[in-house]
Amino acid sequence: MSKNVKQKLAAYAMVLPAFLVVLLSVAYPIVAAVFESFQDGETGAFTMANYTYFFTDPAQRSNLLYTLFVVFVTVAIAIVVAYLLALYLRFVKSKISKTIGMLYLLPRFVPAMCAVYAMITIIRDTGLINRIGQLFGLDINLGMMYHASGIITMNLWFNIPFAAMMIAAGLGGIPDSIIEAAEDVGAGKLRTIFRIVLPSAVPGILAGVILATGRIVGETAALIYTAGTVAQVPSNLLGSGRTLAVHMYVLASEGLYMNQAYATAVILLIIVLLINWLSGRIAAKIAKN
Image (cartoon, rainbow, N blue to C red):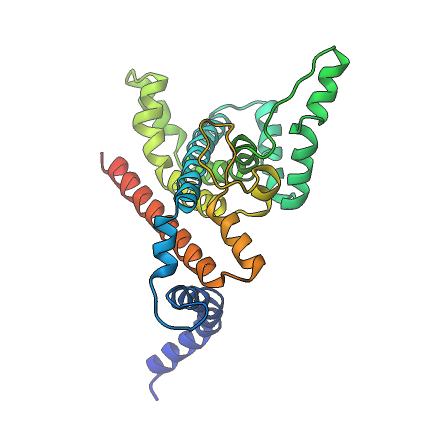
């Protein structure tokens, strides 16, 4: 056996354990979910009923629209705030910026359920904000519990720090000499940000969008406690509703409609893939321009 063949076999042997882990923990559940979603729950026969019910039942269409509403609003706010935060941390040199740079990732290390309960004690109608208001004779009822505003706020807590970290990593690769050269030729701050800084931050923004989308679409714990499970499309930002992730959790926990739960999981996966594809196309177009 030649040395080249031995080196290739050694490389394959090193990659094989990671490949098997991905195959068993990612690929197999996806394939199994797709297979189960086309089965009848009673007979096991092939059927499209699990998907037909999803797109013909008004409640399920409402769940889909509500999920898309929460995802797009949360991602848009998170990316804008994260980009501004990353700009501040990259170009402002002060004690305050250094302190924020050390603290803004703190939410990433707080367990999800701890963060949810902490947020509930603050934003509920009898929470911390309400009690502080009562000290000044004010009855402040935010109305954020079991509403879309509650889940959006909770998801922003989780996703802004991570998106800011990804964008800041991209901005960190911009040499100060380029910024100084742009200023020397008369480029203003806004022109420098949009023509030099923003294109360099596109990969970080894309990574933030992809990771935030996956986190928001699959989130259940925070949604159950802050957004509720009502199957309706909210008429405004403070409306109440049920996302697909919560709907899938309800179906699976009841144990009576497992095949419909699998179909919901497949639809969630397709939504994530489509949003990621769309984000990649937009990012590629921005970078090209």
